[in-house]
View (tube, chains in turn purple, brown):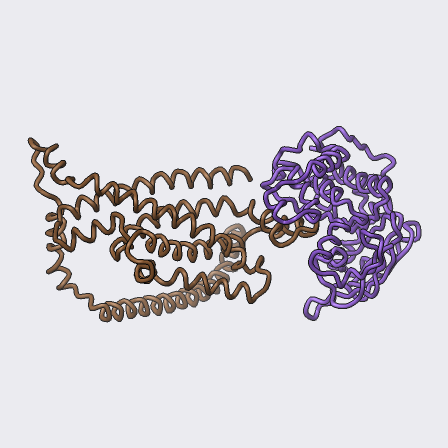
Length: 279
Length: 300
């Protein structure tokens, strides 16, 4: 259970996230939708604590199963928390000049002494974890390639592998398919859902496209101007509510049209080729 | 003549636009003329003031110019074609000693480059706005680097000679000081230009500051660090020669004593050795640096 309580983040006078509260039961796949600038990214960064909240609390069970207030963590505990709730980004955030396996091993950093990791000496078990994760995402054959030699879809799969070896209980995905083409988007969304179901990892996913959220998520939260304006099942999300979330006016209409555009194929008909390279 | 009227009518409309443009253009031209005049006036004024302060006198220059060639001529002994080999051997009588000194100088430069680069490289992460753990650390590190590099290395050398006595060690320390200041500043600027995405990735996975630097930042900046370091080796061979003047040994010491004792031919021979060494290092490092940079851009 992840419990967000009146979480607020201000950048100067701008309120990016405004008193957001919701609970996520373990193993749920939650989609967060809203137009750009609604505070979706900031919310995920707050949960991972890449950004510090102005006020509010994040309550969760930690790696020992104890209840903790995430918003007060510091130092080593904070880094353990970040590993505990892995993050996947729109721009993948891999290290371009390092090879795939080293990039994935980054997910093990918080488990070892600094000296050991600085010399890039990771134990055998970590390499085994890494290979298993890459195998699940069908990326083993690229293990020794440099990250910048891969296509966008492949890079995102490496990023998901990095998240997996963190052995997280929560996975935060910030617009994971916004920079990908249709086929790669489907592969990545399928992978996230499979991880969610097989490993019982809570997935919180920011999405721009309404249809993707409806296709893959158990529950959808709509954000507007930093606040939650919808929280319910995908089936409860009607067109009029979507219009409310994406706002009115010309800019809003354009965002709405974009969000409604069915660029994402329904998962049932999705041509998922796990053996393909996605290029 | 309806066609003629039409062709006349069109320019009539554009003539109006043209005259309006001409008026605007005249204003534009006048503004440029004013700012250009102001700039060159200020430029000339600065030139005159600095010339007067530096006591730069054209007459003295014309009068003294032949004497510089006089000095150069004195540095080259008479060399005849029939006794060419003997003459050169005579000129370079001290070649063994000088090469030994040159080796000392090169080792001084090398050691100082390595030490300065390691220390300056480490400090550069604290001196980068985007990576410094706090503003105070950033500010203090920047000031330390400034002091290390604005004090001329010859002054550092004098200071260390007084402290540790004559020899190569104060020379190495002096060049190390300057190198760490310069490298720290240059590297810090490289650090500030990195993409924040990879280090965000490392941080989000639970990496601490050192791990973020090692895996998120270092792979991005290393080619630039290398390139600057090769350039620094060239500069430090020059510096290592100069600090020899104030007692840090090496080829600079030989050059200084020969000038002091008015052995101009010796000074000429040594100068030639130094110049060709620096040229050789220049060419080699240039080649390597271009390869490094070229490879980097190809990799993208």
